[in-house]
Length: 355
Image (tube, rainbow, N blue to C red; front, side, top):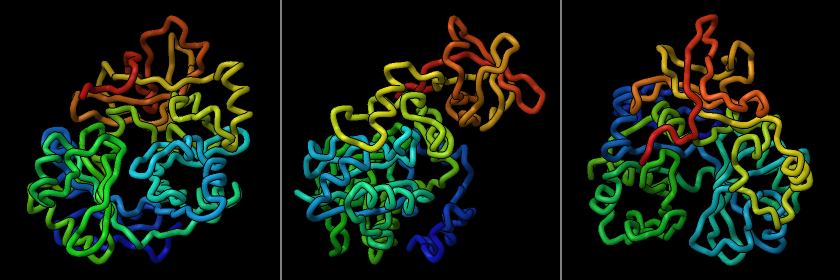
């Protein structure tokens, strides 16, 4: 947990009428106007999220590169300054401790961004791999501006910053009311956009500037439905200590030539073939699938839902489910047992929507 930690935007959220919830020790906005309206705002306009609860672990100095290279599955050495990458942090047995974003901020300096609930376990893993991370949780607020109109909004808010010319997974410094921040072309919604790292002292002004430029405040409820429509993994659902990256369809996030913790275990799983695989399900009957609901094929339980919800874009239930690989041969239709009521569905390959 993260007792005593709070976003500098908490009062701003209250003034906007946000419904606040506890999230890994942080009081964060679940919604403002409603999840469906906010979801639609991101898909059609530009939504603004406060994701300051995400971790900020700085890794720097002698031995930092070697240690971090062992701690995560990405090729840290090949990452250029000004670039970012998605990576996984694993156990020796190949289970997932967390998924993270890694930014190279200097020749021998990186910023690792884990999920809020896993900051301490990721820090421990980095430490065990041979380098000491510094927890900079209160250095930056993180504002995620996402949606088809995000470029126009960002340029109006911060004219001449050059951010709209940046490539995906790149970052650049930005002046925010005289304080040094940085802006990255990253996100978790499937829409184009930015993640703005604003120093705490100018976070509220940066937030208000983006709202004044046309951004719509969006809570974490819509963030979840948006990522689910894209089939993006969420820790504690599609990733856990009991689910390895090959089962979760994340082999693309593994630099096999690097000496990351868990490589030997994953190489064996890759050689043998994973016994489970993650599938997408679009419900063809009424009902909303939820995590833990059994998935059946031809009357036999073959797996369970890892994430499920109503898709505001499709107007139907959608789910990600971890299923027995051999039981799905030739199967195109399944059913989800929603507490005794069967919801039929088609197996699809995520994402569920096309952007």
